[in-house]
Every structure is written in structure tokens, then in C-alpha cells.
Length: 104
Image (cartoon, rainbow, N blue to C red; front, side):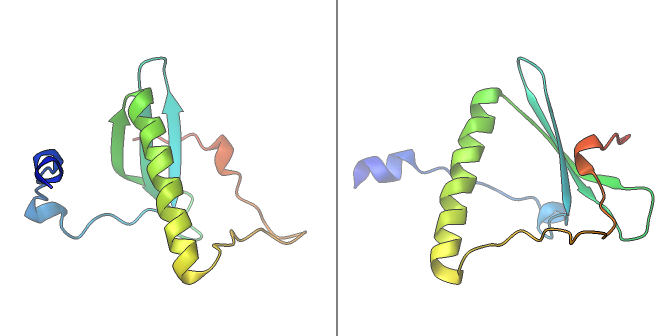
């Protein structure tokens, strides 16, 4: 029990960050030393998108994020059912986000 308390950290969220930032697209780039995650809001029918938040982390931390997301998605799906990504139907307009070249 004492070890659990010793390993806990207190995280403070500044008031201006309490609301958070909505993003419906993530653009990820990396170098040998870091990952850059740009969280973007892309409004429907708008040719421009805006980076809402940029997070830079080490490759090790990026992998830890991957594990944490997997664990949390598994918990979510156990409680609420499988998350089924929407796939465009044949003939629907497709935005190819893998080729996104944004300017921030």
C-alpha cells in the first residue's frame, strides 16, 4: 500500500486547458529521436484544417502511448461493445488523410 502511494503523481491541468481540444484527425511524423503528433480539426466541406494541439514525444513514450490506448480501447469495448470504424462505401468521396500535407 505504501508503494502505491509513493508511485502516484499529481497532475495539474491549467484552467485554460480544462475544456480540451476537439480533433477528428491526427497527423503523425517521426525522426529517429522523436514523434510529432498533430491533432487537427477538419470541418466538413472546408479545404483547410487547423492543428489544435501538437505533442512531441520520444519513440519509447510513443510506444507506451500505443500500449495505453490499446488497453483503454479494450476496456471501452468490454463495457460498450466493439468500436467499428466507418468505412466509405464504394463510390463515396474519400479523403486520403495518409497523404495530408498540412501547414501549422
